[in-house]
Image (cartoon, rainbow, N blue to C red; front, side, top):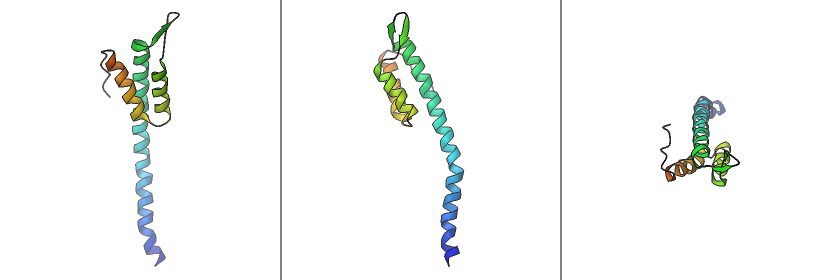
Amino acid sequence: MLARSMKPLLRLSLVLALLAPIAAVAQSDDLAYCDKLYDMAVRYRGKAIMGDMRPTPPMVIAQEQCKGGKTAAGIDTLQRLLRDGDITPPPR
């Protein structure tokens, strides 16, 4: 009887184990896209300090959000910063 009740749990565990790499790849793609947006934002919308372009505080916060796993929030912020400067964000 115990073995019968364990089958659904084992199936669920197997499904979750198989889906985990897919989620990791998606998160990796989002992080790479976030890095690309961050580089563009600093290059085109950053502050010029002694001849170098530096990130603004919102850019730094967005990058930290992406690194912390909140890629959607970070990407939204960086895309908005680019669009506010009439710069079209790159496609994903």
